[in-house]
Amino acid sequence: TAADEPASLLRDDSQGETFPAVSGLEAGHDMENIIKTSALPHDLTPRVTSLDTDEGKLSRDDAPIKRRSLETGEEAGVEKCPERGIKELKMIIDGLDRSNEVIVRHLHEYEKSQAELTIGEKIELINELVKYQDHHAKIL
Image (cartoon, rainbow, N blue to C red; front, side):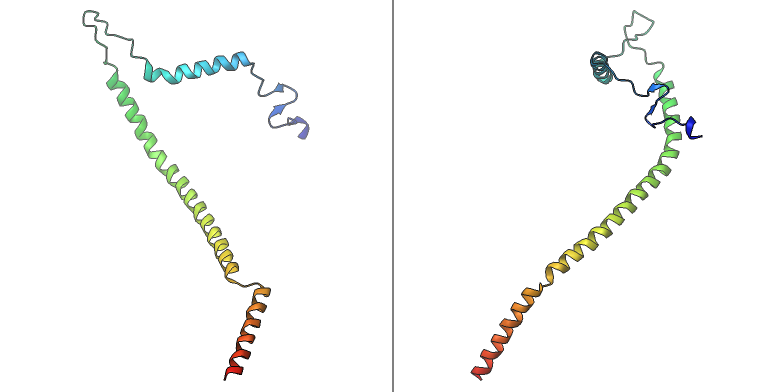
């Protein structure tokens, strides 16, 4: 029933705000974490070394496993993405085609209105033609 529904889509009055306010300290701390974590892949080097401490080389034993699992996941994603991507691209292209049709129509109307003379301009041209014809008749 309507009585069971919350008064607002963004906020349920019975439970308080859905999106509580964040203090400046928390927001600043979150921003620092975002900056640090966004820099992690580029700035940090791998810290896990081989168990064989004499070599001092980084262990890459798990890399092929990760690569295989990523490739499998990517292949599964590849099958789904093109269909969705193709549909989205078709929708975008159709929208652009409709927009282009509207633009062409308005441009044609604009050019047509620019080519048409106003009534005052037509009257002025007619008067000049009449004067020219009168002058031409006097000469002949």
